[in-house]
Length: 314
Image (tube, rainbow, N blue to C red; front, side, top):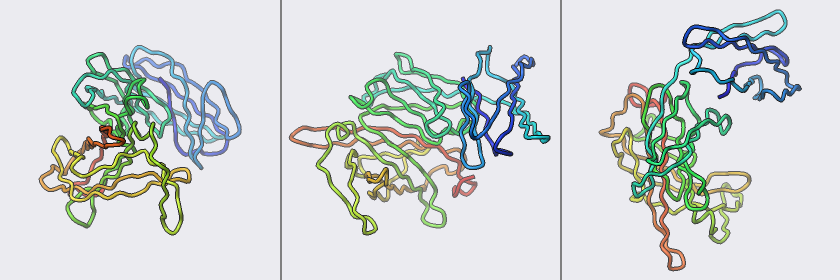
């Protein structure tokens, strides 16, 4: 477990203290940290993004998660104190392969980007359960040691831990990477979805190098994606299938090269467009290369809240 404190820095050098209250009402000792742009302490980590900082420190084992955290920031003669009530929600579910067989996997939950990983292993029946602090999590990684050899990870993106919830994952031979979903504001009654697929087969057996011209500039294509058709993709909002009305291929720039990605447009007619939306994208695609049939399968999950009209984000 870790203690993470982030916010706007009052100066280039200041002190942060944190005191933790347990569910029984007892308060632990205050923990003191010095935050300086040019100072490093091996016992904790400080990251800077412009005027903002994030402090990450190991949290000692306690009988149960904290009920409150009292944070004080002091810079010179100025100090600010905030008492934070801690809320937690349980994320659980079942992990299988695409044949429905239980799949024992690591479930890694990351709050920001790919930092601060916490996680659990599912059991032999594929069941997992983890208690998480309330917040939005950047991503969830699901796979075992066979990653890149036989399987690729299933991903959850923008996962909103605001209540106990169940998320089931299917682990296959591909990825639904960088999945994003947003309402079509002011246009047709549709949602847009974008993602970049990856196939273990193409990762291991790269097609011949190709290039593409975008905005009059030539780019090499890093091609590890299956060639998807709309009838090979299923999109569900809160368990109800959304008809695909458009599928377009585009290229995502990454490190000087581009990678194939897809933009989907799906109808939101007959969907419950109010409240938390859990979007599941699955694909099952086949390729034939050198007389050999290759199957590409993957699942991705994304969560968001539309407003009362089913448009923009809250």
